[in-house]
Structures are given as structure tokens and as C-alpha cells.
Amino acid sequence: MSPRYLLPALVALALALCAAPAQATTLLPVGTFQEPIYVTSDPSDANRLFVVERTGKIQLLSGGVTTLFADLGSKVECGTSCKGERGLLSIALAPDFDISGRLYVDYANDKDGSIHVAELRAVGSSAAISTLRDLLVIEHPVDNNHNGGQLQFGPEGLLYVSTGDGGGAGDVHHNAQDLTKPLGKILRIDPNPSGLLPYTVPVGNPFAGTAGDYAPIWSYGLRNPFRFSFDKLTGDMLIGDVGEAKSEEVDFAAAPGLGAGADYGWNCREGLIEGPATDPQCATPPTAGFVNPVYVYPHADPGGGAAFGCAIIGGYVVRDQSLGGLYGRYLYADHCGGGLRSLELSNPFASDRSEGLAVDELDSFGEDSCGRLYVISGAGVVSRLVGSTAAVCEAATPLANSIVGIRAQSRKVRRGGRAVITVFVSPCKGRLGEPVKLLRNGRAFATRHLDRACTARFRPKIARPARFRATAGEDATYVAAASRRLKIRILHRNPAHGHKTH
Image (cartoon, rainbow, N blue to C red; front, side, top):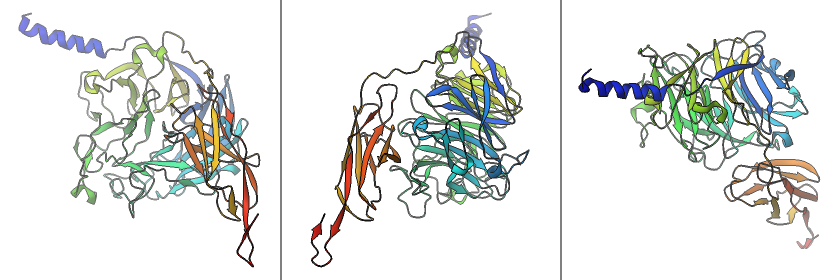
């Protein structure tokens, strides 16, 4: 072969070698379930797995034994089979789950299509349906597809929710580009554990201050972001957005911004090509332009072993070091083929490769609190990805004490008024988003998440004198700690003279 042709051949060979799996990765079945669709773990115990079944059950798998954790079948209303893409779609356990027992569920009711994001409270190893409390209810009455369905707590401790465009073809309901509607979006909310409000809109939500816009919207222009995830190491967001007729896409939003206000283009575009563009807003694209996907692949087979399919199943950036050459790569699949693939986000098109594994009816990936990854087959089997060496999942060892402080704007409040109480935690470094709990007269009142200054604010209503205390839970660096007690008294006025009395 002449040198003229040898060099391109060597380059092609080098690229092929770079894109080949570095070591054998296999799938280890961990259990069989009834139409499983998602799996996650206890934030503080990766060996307690929670498996979501579409028809409404959440199963707890621990020590090889499966027990029923919760049954939401009467709320999901699928019976023995769900229509289209409806059903119980995912759950997210609060970062302080072991203290608060709070977890959140996302389901599309099979009778009327309404999408529900709701809170459950666990006691021990189960959660009663009587504790279910709706945070969001989104109407989705016509088509039974494109519900989105992913819940994830972000690196700052707030809850993110994905919603599809309402179903049908071509965004027929004109939702994805409309900032007054919740469909075709990533939403961000702060769950309100006190129950006084379903949720609060976090400071920094890009459309919260705009009249008429739907305040929980974080980003938009999505068709069906069925699965998204956060990189455990960097906090970056990865979204697998299911395409229409020609293209599937992966959207990337780097931390700390996480794509706030991003318009990913649907239905003005499908991936990197022109979309139906029937949404009225396509006539006036955003000033900053549409956010391009970091990776796309076609529906038609391009040959050469390249990716193709019909419905992307978004996965995770691999942070399980036992998986060797997969570490740091983004793992994903397509529902129509079931083949596992991965890519390097720094050079996705050149690095995309098959991992040589395929799963029938592949519906989702999952990740436990140690970063181990799972693959879910809708046919029933949940498996864990394993490498040639055993995964190490050691309990974190606390290293130092925390200091929790509590102060009030005033220690005397009119009866029925609200106190303004600020809690702060020190040391501050690395504690953004950590939960702190406020106790009133020894009982849990509310949980908030630390801001960048490591403070959290509470506004309890004062009907009678009360004593407050704040606690911060144990994490990988600091042991649990509690503040001193703070007493709030009632401020009285003498009605005859207008003098204050106490």
C-alpha cells in the first residue's frame, strides 16, 4: 500500500482502537420485577435499592430480599397495564431521606393523563399512600405519550422535573416553546416539607419574575426528555431528548448554570436539523439562539456500526471506577435496539462506540448513591453493570464537627404573625444545597437547603410562644450537629394605651 493511502488507514485504525471498549463489562441481574421502569437507592445506603414498577408499586430490594415499599396503584389507575407511556415513571429520594423520610414520585394517571409530582413519607421500610401530597398537577388529557417523567435532585439540593410536549406528532399542542405552559420543559422547584405550600419557586429560576410565564420552568424547547441525569462528579446535567422522525439528541448543560433559561429548539428544530416549526414562537427565536445538542444520531442506519434508533434512553456519566475504560464516559442506549453505547463528552462524535451489550425492551438506566449503574428491561429484569474488578462502595467517614447557628430578626412577634429565623452552618466550604431541619418545640417543622452563604431562612407562623432549634445531618465530611434553643415570644399591646406589654 502506498504511503498516500497508508496514513488515512492508520488514522482510521487509531480512531477505531480509541473507540473500542477498554475492558469487558457485563450485566449482573439483581432481581426480576413486574414491568420495572426505574431504579435508585437510599442516599446513605447504596445497597437499599428502590425499583419502580409502571403500574404503581415501588419495591425495596435489600440483601437479596424484595419487599413492597409503597403501592400507588389506586392513584396511577393503570390496573394491570398502562396505556401508551403512562404510569408511575420515576422517584427521587430527598437528600435527607434517612432523617425526613421524604421521597417524591412522578406518575401520569392512566384515566385522565394528568401528570403528578407528589411527596410521600416513609416510616421504616414502607410508605403509606395516605401520606401522598401533590406538589404539581399538570393537565395532559389528549395523547398518552410524551410525559417526560424523570425526577432528580440537583447538586444544589433542588428538585428537577422533566415533562414532554403533550404528545402527538410535531408538538401539535404547541407547548414546547410556550413559556406560559409547563409541558416540553425541565422544571425546578423547592419542595416545601412543612405542607403550608405545595412547593416554592427557587430564587434564580429564569422565568419566575416574568408576568404570565410559568415560574417553575428551568429550560424549554424539549420534545420528550424521558430521562436526564446529573454527573456525580461535576454536577453537569445531561438530557436524553427523544426525537420525532429523523434524529435523537443528547443535550448538555454545564454546572453551575445547568442550562437556566436554555431553549433546546423543539419544535423549531429536531436535533441539528429543521423541525416542523409550527410553534408560533419559532418565528422569533431567542436572542441567544437555540442551544445545540452535544450529540445526535439518526433513525436510519448509517452503517459502520454507528448509532441509530428511534427513541434515546438517556443515561449517566460513569463514575464507577470498577468499570475501567467506561469511567468518565456518558452511557446511553436506544429503546428500539437496546444496545448500550457510550461517548466522551469532550469529543462525542469521534468517540461514540458500542459497548457490546444489548438488553431487550431497555426502558431506563439507574444509579445508586455509590455511582454504580443499573439497566432496566421492561420485560422484568434489573441488572447492574459490573467490570473485571469489584466495585468499592465504602461508607463515608465523618472527619469533623459542624457548628449550627440560629438567630431571629426579632424574638417577639405579634400573635398570628411570622417570625423570620435564619440558620447558618459552619464550616461552609462545599455545603451548598445541604439540608438543615428546623424543630419547633422538639418536633420537625420544616427542612430547607443551604444557600451559597451556608444559610437557610424559615418563616414560621407564631400562634403561641415556641422554642426552636436547628439541626444539620451527618455527611461525608461533618458529623451531625444541633444549634442552641431559640425562644420566640408573643408581643402584646395594651388596647387602652397602645403600650407594649410582655
